[in-house]
Amino acid sequence: RQVNLVSDLPGRALLQDTNLVNAWGISFSPTSPFWISDNGTGKATIYAVTNDALGATHVAKQSLEVTIPGEGNPTGQVFNNLGGFNGDIFIFASEDGTISGWRPSLGTNAEALVTRLTAVYKGITVATTANGPVLLAANFSEGTLDAYGTNRTLIQFTDPHAPAGYAPFNVQSIAGMIFVTFAKQDDTKEDDVPGRGHGLIDVFDLPTGSFHRFATGSDAGGKLHDINSPWGIALAPVTFGKHADELLVGNFGSGTIMAFDADGKYRGLLKTLDEGPIVIEGLWALTFGNGGRAGVPGTLYFTAGPDDESHGLFGALEPVTEDDGD
Image (cartoon, rainbow, N blue to C red; front, side):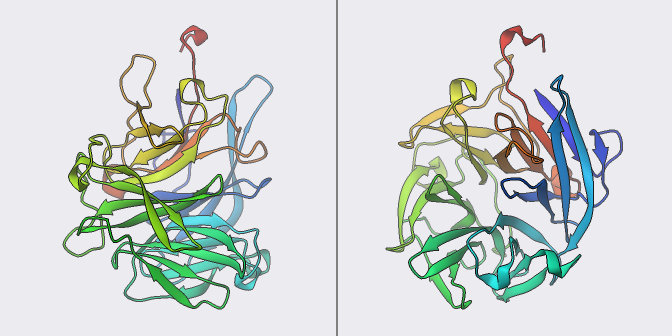
């Protein structure tokens, strides 16, 4: 069951916020509300999502709005509890090649941590190494996974087995593994070319700098047809019905959500009660709640940029069973 929580348009969701245009990255601390990157307005906005005693969902916008530096086109973001990077706890990637960070003392403005003019950053995560935390960013224009240590020195990694024209589209650390999704570059290498079978997924090993293939689209030399510019990644909890404990990957190109088991075996698309695939136009991030002010652990939350990324949606997919009457 889809519940639309926030939209930039009136009447589309429980709450309207005109800042929420092309809602993209999501992150949160173990207790914080949801932080969401507003790619179309250059902000990060914050929403508390809770369920009352009857199970009804409530959403409340928080007063803090954070302005992203540079051209202000944030994509992925990550909560950083590993230190470094000026103590910034929320870190944002942007399409203009900026990586920025925020900590409470900065107030309403994030600060630029890194600027790389040749980069188009579509996603970001943070990982631990023996030498401290490392930011990993999906550099779509250069076709690299960019690693920055706390000294901000850049090391770039490439998957030598990815077909020409495919580039890192997102990177997320899930259950101790670093997943990198790839999409097909357009002629300018700034945006993806959607299509059936367009995409692949790697697991990246940071100590060795090596990529290990997890799933390969039919356009990229594999057999997976349902993949289509994959971006969002989440691990389903044990309570999530038939797809419990499976890796969920959202397709920006088609709006569908794929499920994989731990070995990379494809388990099909998430479906509605009438057995049709769930489709969310312009689907970006996927995450389960934190059990605090960022939703409940058994519900799948998503962001999207519908109407060719000109609008924004933040919503929830609540698992339902046949006898729920939905």
